[in-house]
Image 1 (tube, helix red, strand yellow):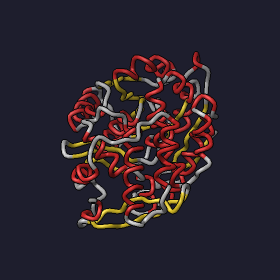
Image 2: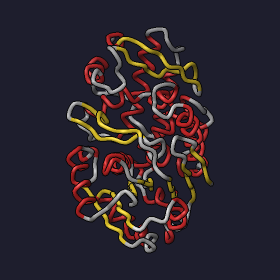
Image 3: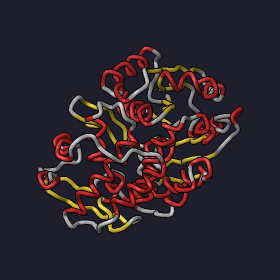
Length: 346
C-alpha cells in the first residue's frame, strides 16, 4: 500500500510485507523512483547492521558507491558527538548534496540520520527504512529529527522531511516481545487521540492482528496532522499525548526503559492529573491502564508526579512559562490545553 504525504516536500510511504528471505525486496525500485542516486550512505546502529545490512545492501547494487556508518545502539548514543562522527564519515567519503542517506533502524537511528541529513552541507536527501514497530507507525514519518542533550530529550533538532519512507513489515517478525511492546505504546496513543477502533486491534494481540492495517491506520492519522501542521505549532501537538511526562520518565530511568513504556506511563499520569483537575472525565485514565496492561505494559510509576514535572520544565514545548498538554474529551478524541507550568504540580 502507498500513502502520499503532501508536506512542503511531498513524499511517499510504501508499506509492504515480503517473506523473510526477501526482506527489502522492493527497496531498490523505491529508491530509484525518488532519484537516480549514485552515492548512498547507510546510517544504522551496530545491532541493526548485523541483522539487516546485508539485505539492504543487496538492494543498492545500482549505486556507484555505498558506505555504511554504524554506531552503538541505544538512546544514549543520540548525541551531537554521534552526529559529528557522521559528519566526518560523510566528508571523508566525499558525499555531496546529490548523495542520499538511508536511515536504517528504529527511532534513534532515524532521528540521528535525519538530523545529519538536515544539517550536512545545509541539507541532503534521506530516506527512512524503519526496522521497529515504533519507527514504522510513528517516528519515521513527519520529518522530526534531532538529538538529546544532558538536560533533556530532543532539545536539538530540525523538521526536515525525508524523500520517502519504505516499510517492510517482514522485519517486524524478527523483533522480540519487548521491541513490539515499545511500538504498541505509540499505537495506543493513536487510538486514544484519534481512532479508538485501534483498541480493538490491540486487544486481539499483536500476533492475531493485521499489522499492515495497524501501521496504515496510524500513518493515515499522522498524515493528517503533518499535512495540516507540518511545523508542529498547532494541531500536530496532539501527537505529543503522554510525551511531556513520558520523556521525563525516560530521563528519570536514565534511558534504560523503552520509549513506548515511558509514553504509556506519561499518558496515564497526565490523564490522572487532568481528571483530578476536572479537565477530563473520570474513568479515561482507568481505561488507558486497562488497555495498556492488556498489552503487557507496566502502568505504575516509581517516580513521584512532581519529580517528573521538575524534569519536564526543560521540555522544548515550553513557551513563556506555558505549555500545551494533550488531553482527551473521550477515547478517540483529543483536546489541546494550554496551562502554566506550575499548574502541572500536584
